[in-house]
Length: 159
Ligand code: 4NP
Image (cartoon, helix red, strand yellow):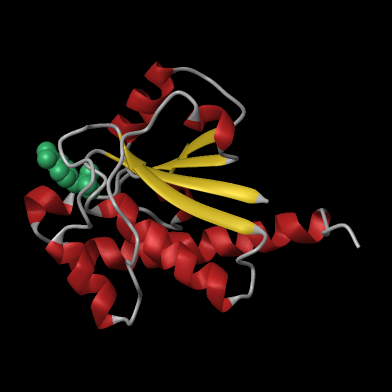
């Protein structure tokens, strides 16, 4: 099983959007039993809350479900429990790296987006621009899916 965790600040706007989009792609590809997707925040203000209305609207417009997604805070255990920890901006990555080190490969989401103009996915909590974020999230998740498919081909499931 490949385990992916998306991380942002509040875990209500960007990382739950990435979680929902990636889960949608993984299920569409029939890879639900080989890849798991989750998200968490570095902050604790919104623990237990569903995604922000702007994130829900961007997902609903594309028929993507956010069912079951609730905000939680990242913990030190997550650094060993996941294979990939994908941080939505460089502040998030710094905060994750301050928690410690583990088995997980820590990276930024924009490493997945070709010709990126910024190393950060802009925070729509402040900008209100959830559509701009959706476009980046979709591009990055498609690239992540491509990389995961390659990884799964290199390590086929046991017969
Ligand atoms: P997110 O956006 O990190 O994409 O979930 C934010 C949500 C809440 C806050 C900041 C950013 N906040 O300060 O409460």
